[in-house]
Image 1: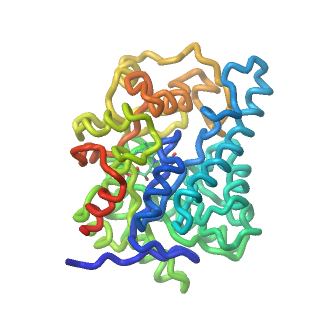
Image 2: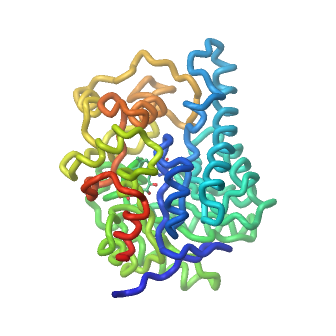
Length: 366
Ligand SMILES: Cc1cc2nc3c(=O)[nH]c(=O)nc-3n(C[C@H](O)[C@H](O)[C@H](O)COP(=O)(O)O)c2cc1C
């Protein structure tokens, strides 16, 4: 059997070429990240909205300014807690944090992560053009932009080189045609093969090899759920894969058991695209929440924007779509019919909720 390569990124080398994708809100916290890191992959905590159900925040706070300030402070404190928990659970593992550029507390979360022992920062949902400046005092932290096009990678490399004399330590290429969560393409573009991983990964690998002396691994995200799909991604030139959906029905995933069971019993036929307040669509599982959106209703239309969490938000600015923070949070806490359950195209690959170590063994063919 073909031996899988290890995955070197910056100062760190994961024994297996597997990154667990950051999954908000609280789907990938310390529990899942530490388990993946202990099993030889890279475990990633999603920093988005961590404060929401933390002891540091009360959504019922009446003063809007205070509520907003407390939300951001709660995110910071909850990220510290989560990193500390993960490090206790995985003293030697490689741990990353996923931080969305689109978050209004992006800079604070980046600073918090690097000051609290994170090994890598994964950053997408916008171009992380200023990331090296924010982390300059912690050069040991590897920086990994998440992109969906060659053009985005080129812009980042040029900007980082010119302004910071630094290059990314790796790239994650998120395939909008298969990955769970927010997509880096509009719904009408999804049929175009030019935007898929099959086209973008080889083009990016060639560009990086021809342009820079420093090797920059490319990590394929989207649609990887077993050894065969992992090997296929490597055959395109990727050095590793990033996996989200397959890690959800696991003992260590941080979501409610009902969320994991909803994923477990779902099949690819249940996967739909939903509009999101950030503008681009998301890939999720059909449920009552999605049915209501498709029927033209606006679930939670009377909800207040309680945190002003995103740079761009159609719900806050135009009362369109829904509050994504509440929708993701509701689902993750077990209300899987009235919340938003993100999932990739290849959901339903496990036959039971398993320990992460078993999923990893399946992926690596051990
Ligand atoms: C439930 C869920 C939540 C996600 N949340 C985030 C997130 O907060 N930030 C992010 O960059 N990617 C997010 N993603 C994308 C994953 O990190 C990963 O790249 C993706 O799931 C890979 O595709 P796969 O689901 O087919 O394995 C999410 C995916 C899922 C399924």
